[in-house]
Length: 252
View 1 (spheres, rainbow, N blue to C red):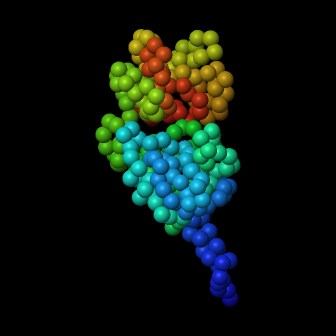
View 2: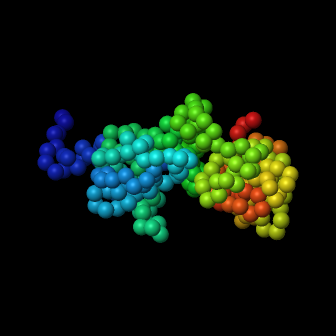
View 3: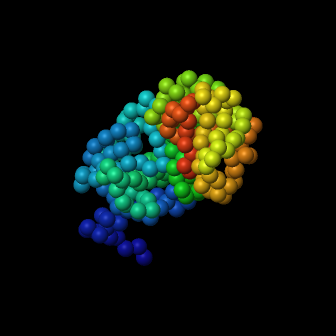
């Protein structure tokens, strides 16, 4: 016999059911609270009615992106926050995987699938990182959103284009010509002139983590690779690899 629940308890259970993530989702961390979205701040940040600012973890906005895709996903809706903890960042924002009421997939997955976000590479949980990577790949193959142009990805053979994006999050693809170590730093070189060409830099302390993910720096040589991260200018343009998820073999 099914019992009907009425009153506040029934309402609470109904809301929890609406915003519960699918059990199969790899990014289903522990619940870290919920709330009602009151305002959209930027392409991956919003404010709840109780004043908390929530930052979508695991993704970055596409170059030139705006708030419209996030607004369509969460504006005026109840959301559940998932994550390893609810500690705020240095700006007071809570980073979380977010699931909107009535959705089976997280907001991150939806934005990635539509080509309105880029996987950041900064997700320690491998299963969750793989899920986000796959969602981005769906958009890339279908040429949705930013993947329908050259906005989302830059050619490693055009370092001048990359140098113009200092301080921005960028996905770069090209063939690795050499891998060299100088002191405690490994240089994954996409060109022959280090003063001009693009290179990904890897601290020697990162080698164990890379190997645990199935990669080693030397194995990248003569392979087509995607690297993602924030562009710096040190001689030529550089991206520091701080997590294995920032490096991806293209399969070519």
